Length: 93
Image (cartoon, rainbow, N blue to C red; front, side, top):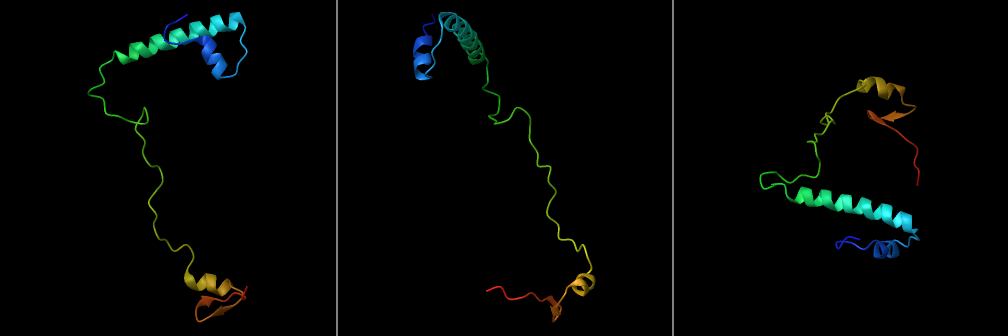
């Protein structure tokens, strides 16, 4: 068992009932993970900019632009009621 972690303690914290074979398998997997992390810690990252994503992100949305989709006179002409070039709607409250 590795000195860096205790599989029995981890199983207790996770409330898992592990068989001996599961403990052996998970223990080997955890050792592999820890070895990989140790390998990553040896890399020189002093010149690498911190980032939250592996690839650069860019906004794919377009800027909001005010566009007149329908000519004002056409939509007002379609309204059931209008008053002084505004839509007239029934009072709700």
